[in-house]
Image 1 (cartoon, one colour):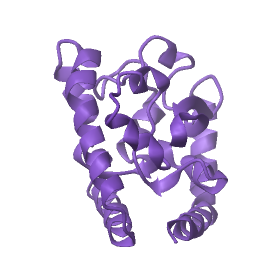
Image 2 (cartoon, rainbow, N blue to C red; image 1 turned 90 degrees about the vertical axis):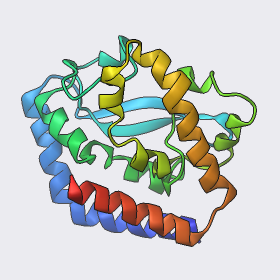
Image 3 (tube, rainbow, N blue to C red; image 1 turned 45 degrees about the horizontal axis):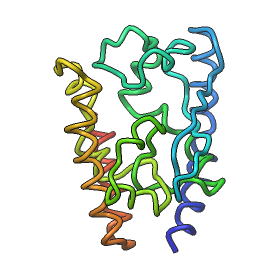
Image 4 (cartoon, one colour; image 1 turned 180 degrees about the horizontal axis):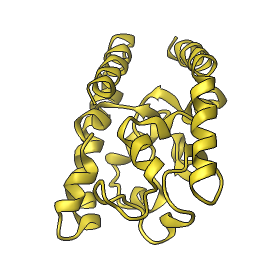
Length: 196
């Protein structure tokens, strides 16, 4: 049933938002060099890598130097990228991932392989379900970049503090799956974006 709603909502959203997607695409191309859509390997269901799509919000090859985005003033983020990230508009191309079937609207946010390598046996359980565009952790850590900016060692802080808590929240969802929770998370995410 969740797959049905994933497809239904994603197709409707892509149709309704197509003018906005086109505007974002053009803005990115006009204001910075490189492709408008950023493609990155992420770890999905059954520990298998897949190609995740996002609107590019950083300078080309910025992810080669640092995987985490540190604060709102990370110099690698473009001016358009700051706006897109603020309203999570950079995530919209992941609706294509949902239609392709390697993501759901709701599920654990997919990590890059580097961070998955730090998971213990219990934490690997998050890889038994489809990753998602939003989840409990996305809502709780909406200010993750600011938290990382305050840390003496952002990567270490992410691995030792933020990542374990994200996985704990993801396991809550995985261990208690239901359509009710699915819609609750979608609604909470929508409200968070609107309030922003």
